[in-house]
Length: 340
Image (cartoon, rainbow, N blue to C red; front, side, top):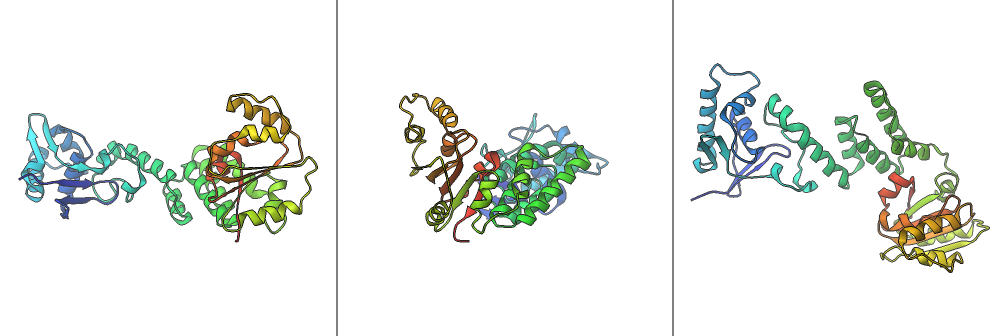
């Protein structure tokens, strides 16, 4: 009866037969299993023989046949097929999944199996998938720090780390992380950090003014995302203490689609374009240079907020349940956690 074989390469090698773990300890068998698992289909025997050993044996084909025989004993003969085209593994393999979902990844690919040749051939593409999954996941700063240290030229990782440190109130550590990646890029590539990293650094370098953080935003980026318990009270209290000669407008998004037309009506515009892109452009025009407050409440994500951002001049405060990292990365927003 056919057995179900699962091979997990996205991290330490794991093998399960009918749901039960199977230990494959011999280096040659582990390398063979990884080499077969990472490919979808038949693998030429001569190609396999070049990737299973860092130090090539005197008779690679005989060594390969021996490794195949032992692997069949461990997994079942029907799981490792042979034929004129070479060898083929019959298994469910995480590395062959089309998804980049972070839950599939338990660490870096080929972490404890394979040879230098195998890692060189397949490691870069899998590592890129791994890092893309990492960058979409909500990871703590400590884990981002470890990953950024392993991939010191990956600017997107450093950006995530710096933003995470800033959200935790660790401004000095965030500045230190920026200096670390700047030095790496200068020493190894002779390049400056990306504009996104430089924008975050400029924001972090602004001297803080006031205890609540919102006063500092008004001096710097003029865009704040206030989140956490008591966000509404914090913004209300702060707004009462400020002066906005050109007025204040507030829009409760309530998790709905962008409502730029409502903002235009609040600005006294009567002829409103039909398309959202045109409404956004008009709103930026009529608000440019105005010393006013635009408050966008109960936002759910950056895409909902971006069409509603005014022209250069107004102060913008967005309230949300989460810090909305997308606004921090692209628009230079400062995240302020209410209640702490």
